[in-house]
Each structure stands twice: as C-alpha cells, then as structure tokens.
Image 1: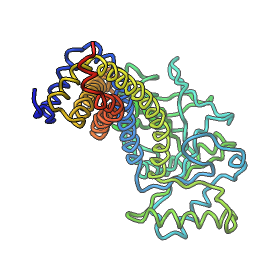
Image 2: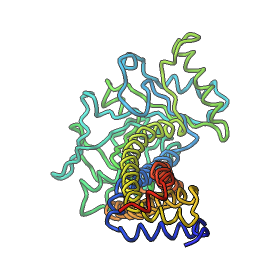
Image 3: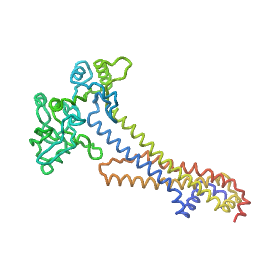
Length: 421
C-alpha cells in the first residue's frame, strides 16, 4: 500500500469491499434510510397523481367559469355566519348579465334538492329496483354547455322543459347501473318514480374520462329542470350560479361580478363578502393546501426514518473504526494522511447510505406500480424530482453522520493503532 491509496477511486474501492464483506450488517444499518425514502417517494407519487387528476377534473368542468354561492364552496361545512346568509337568486343572475361586460352566460343550479331535510326524496325506483344515492340538482338548460356535459343517450333539458316545469330527468351512469343493469343502452323513455311521482328519463350523461378513484360526483347526479326543482322542493332555495366569463377575461369578470353582488347584497366598503366566488384555480389552490399538510406528515415520517438510519450508520461506522484500528495504523505508518483517512470513512458511510437510497427508490417505484395495478383508477405518478431528492438526501445522511467516525479514525495515533489487538 502507498500514498496513492488516498486517491478517491482507490478509497471508494476499499469502502465497497468493506460494505460487501459485512452484507447483513450493512442491510440492517440502512433499513431506516430505506423506509424513509420509500415513505417519501410513495406519498409524493400518490399526491402528484391525485393532484393531476383533480386538475383534470376541475378544468374539464370549465377553466373559464366562476362559481358563485352564498356559502363558501370547496372544503368543509358552512359556519354559523354563512348559514344566515341570503341565497343568490335569479335576479342576481339577470343583474350580472345586464351590467357586466365580461360575462358570457350564467347557469343556475338548485343544488342537492333532496338533501338537508327539504322534504324531497331523491330515491329513484324502477320495477322493484332502488337507487338511494342520487344527488339531485335542478339546472337551467344552458348548464350543459357551461359545465361541458356530454350525453351518452337521449337529449338534454330544453327551455320548454324548464318553462313548463316538466317531470323529466337526465341521469348519471350510477343510476343506470342500479336501475337498468340488464338494459343499459335502452334507458331513454323509461319512467321511474321519485318523491312519490313519475318522471321520464330523457337522457344519460357520458362518464367523464378524468374520474377520481374511478368515479366522480357527476356519476351520481340526477338533473331535472330548474323550475321543476323549485316546484317540487320549494323550501330548497340555495342556488349555485356558474358564471361563464368571456374568453381571456376571467380575472376581470371576477372583479365585475364581485362588485355587482356586493352592491346588490348591501355589503359596505371594508366589509367581507357575504357570498363566495371561486374559479378553477381557487379549487386547485385549496387542494394544494391539503396536499401540503399531508406532505408535511410524510416528510416528518421520512425524516424520522432517515434519522434512525443515520444514527445506525454512525454507530456502525464507530464500530468499524474500532474493528479496523490496526488497519488504520498501518495506513498511517506508510504515509496515509488524516485527509485520506477521513475521506475513506466518509465515502464508506456515503456509499452505504447511497445503496440504501437506491434500494428505497426501487422498492418505492415497485410499491407505486403495485398500487396502480391493484387499484387501476388510483392515480400514482412517480415524479423525477422525488427520486433525485431521495438519492441526494440519502447521500447527505451518510455525509453528515459519517463525520464523527471519520474524524475519530483520523485522530488515532499510528503507534497505538499498531499495538492494538
């Protein structure tokens, strides 16, 4: 052995030889690092996939739309103040269309008229079969264009249906599956019972491609004319207004609509809105906030695993220093510098944790693929940045926790080392 053994290439070879000669110990040492990397990458892959799915769903409903409601739309139930707010109404929609220069059209939705004790029963019955999970909305005829609805069968609600308050329905795929399992392609014209009266099915909605976990809320929807909803559920006065902005004028439309509604609802200067306006970007930002919280939990778990792994690496390297005391003495005696000794043990620690990072990445990719295989509709997209970050962090763990053993090895007295038994 000579001084050239201090070169990184030779030192790395020595580090690899030492790791491979203690395979079982090395595997146990990096177990915490493997767990930490797996946790970080698997969670990152699921969250990234879910986010892309959410973005696709929101944008498919219309990226140029504004959602106006008297409650805060999005996550969580309304608070006490929101429950006391006056709902939006048809006059508000007419005022916006009349006064705004940036709004193209407005669809009105009487939301979930069978919910919250309205007295309307949205349980659908056909020849002894029931569908109890419907979400029944009354909608204006222009809802189809504004919400980008596509029909699989039949037709959509017309102005005549709405004006005459007809008992007609356009249903989602879940209703078809429940009521017509043996005749899914011949649903239009069938008569079902709901809320004690008969309703004619005039259309079936095409399932959207961007489904979340294979299903979205629209699959459970049952649409009826807006004025019909007012007739059958008069106590359900909550109205969601979907405001379509003119192309390229979404931000201006939001400001105009806000100003018009503040004036109509008597909101004074400096007071917060007593209504809510949301765009596709707002919904995505809300979801990003949730992802951020879940991501922090995943990072905490990952850091715990990396900390355990790092402490394990430090302890095993300290043991290695003790076991190789005589080797260190011989290397120093033939000219190895302190820097060469430090480099050897640092490279050994970093190589060990790098292997842990590689194993963690491979297992994480395998787990993500397995999740998608078992649950085909479950989004799990493995981001490249998570893989690169995982490998980088694993090397840094080896560098940080390898410093103490490396310094201890470099400070050993060569004479004492040669006497060591």
